[in-house]
Amino acid sequence: MRMGQEISVSHYDLGDFDLFYQKLHEETVLLGQLIEQQGFSNRHPVAGFEIEAWLVDEDMRPASINDHFLAGLNDPLACAELAKFNIELNSMPTPLAGNVCSRLKNQLQSTWNKAVRHAESLNSRIIMIGTLPTLVQADLHLGNMSDLNRYRALNEQIQLTRGKPVHLDIAGIQHLKLDHHDVMLEAATTSFQIHTQVPLSIAHHFYNASMIVSAPMVALCANAPFLFGKNLWHESRIPVFEQAIQAGGYAAAAQGPVRRVGFGTGFARKSILECFQENLDHYPVLLPEDLGGATESFQHLKLHNGTIWRWNRPLIGFDEDGTPHVRIEHRTPAAGPTVVDAIANAAFFFGLAKSLCDELVEKGLPMSFSQAKDNFYQAARFGLDSKIVWFDGNEHPIRQLLKTELLPRAILGLKSFGISRCDIEDFLAIIQQRIANRQTGSQWQRDFIKNNPDEFTAMTRRYLENQNKGNPVSEWMLT
Image 1 (spheres, rainbow, N blue to C red):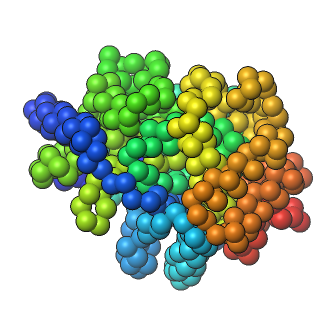
Image 2 (image 1 turned 30 degrees about the vertical axis):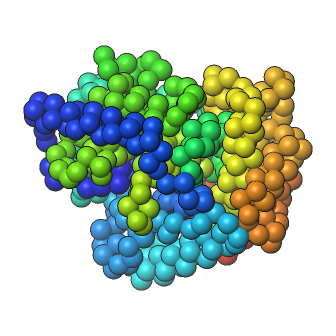
């Protein structure tokens, strides 16, 4: 649940909300003016990522030690997450060209190896997986919340906005229903977030492309079938996160189309500004921090945007020379199963989104927003077994679509970015093998539990062994 910046307090009064909204309005107006004046970076696209992970003890149970762990790790690319048993690892921005995938893999592998060694020195382990199979609901209490004001304030404000407990209700292979009384339920989900900085001129097209490709991405990257012992969706993170932070727009429209966590409300028609205008017009301020600073730094706009969790989220940042830029954050993939799987997922996303973005620039939107949204939830629920409606208006098995159309598109997209042939072949071969073997992280977990009913600790231990060997999940054996 990363929101970027820490805040100074965890309680507010009404005046704070008025002042923040005023500054948010000023910054949104300025953003519109800068976009109108083409005052944004048009540099060649840049890649990056964030990956969330779990700290576990030797019994594979959550270890609430992230403050101690991060202090000892002492790495600027590592930071705390919502729960004391979660951390986040980040990449350095890397130009989307040449051997970018190899470079991102080497970055993540280096950081990951360092984190693994450090965890072991604390008699702990670190694991990247969408939902931790050994987690129980009792682990998700406020005593396990990271010691940061932004999380305490967020919990308080969401509780006030919602006015009732979280009611989790997920119908998958099995049915999970429960109530929870704080935002900690969100800590059950960990993801791999892919960042793409793109020129302003194509930002809204790339945003739309990212939404359309969310269905194949979530099916291909599924790694979260179980929560609290229940076999749910292939990617159960999706309904868990949406229901855990369920607070809507104005007039408490939590059940309406304007939700703080979700697929969004529509494509961006003319400009990426539409998303930020919607943030201002439809989402109440949750964290009215007085951040000071010049309007040009967009501090209030960025904090507010960080409390609205679209599965594809536009972000405002700055180049090294201070020029503002737009990034699209693609949030659908689960964390894991391995470093090489994560970077292969990113490679497939970059290529497919670029290919589709080019088509959108040339021909316009190939499907309705409601169809893209429906495809996404079908794919999250049924994974590589799902069927989705594609550009021809017909329903296709997603595995067939991936093989015949989407992998070739991804290759074309990566070539047009100027990615090296070796990177394209090496990383997309991992995706190709995963599709051929029908083995995502989610499918491997389900098959293990089918052979070893209720053995979630043994499964997590085996999963971790496989993860640390580093072979792609498509090659993992059950014994």
